[in-house]
Amino acid sequence: MATSVSALLQYHRALTLSFSQQWQQRAAVRVAAQRLMGHDVEGWRASLQRSASVAGCTLERVEVSGPHQAHAALTRLRC
Image 1 (cartoon, rainbow, N blue to C red):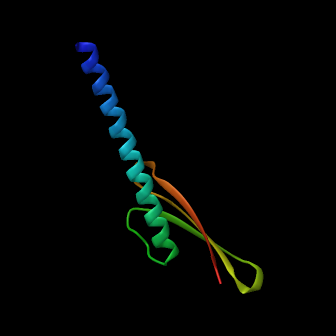
Image 2: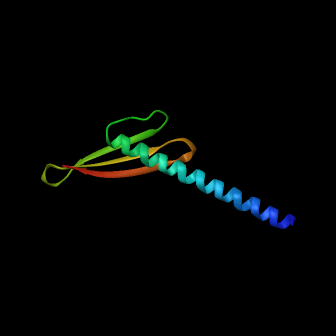
Image 3: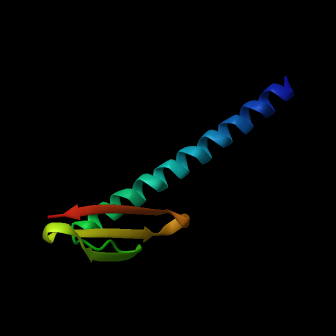
C-alpha cells in the first residue's frame, strides 16, 4: 500500500511540474505575440529584429524571456 501511495504521489508531482512548464511556455508565446503587435509586457525581456525582404515586405522576429526561465520566439512576414 505504501509503495502504491508513493508512486501516485510521484506521478502527481510529475503532472504538476509538466502543467506548470506548459503554462509558462504558453504565457511566453502570448507575450511574444503581443510584442509583435507593438505592446511591451512588464517583467519580460524582448528583442525585436526586423529585416527587409522581397517586394517591400519586412520579416520580424521577436524573442522573449521572462520569469521561471520561460522563453519563446515568433516570426512574422509583414507586407
